[in-house]
Image (cartoon, rainbow, N blue to C red):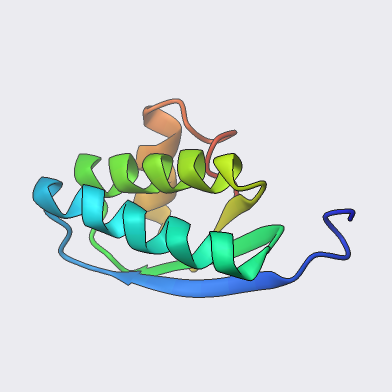
Length: 96
């Protein structure tokens, strides 16, 4: 099945996100993705303050999504979050 024919799933991440939350967040999202068979996942990040933990969480979500055949795309990212993602060299990993 091509990526265009696969469903799109959307979810939102709200903050603050602590480093201790990363494992559970990734487990819940990856479980959702395995059940959905989605090709693209829209991750609404309007409710998070940009920091290194948030970017780490998003990168982990992207890695988990790719393992299920999906791609995470950021939605409603603030300018500060986009700049931090770019500063960390992850623009190609975390596209909008």
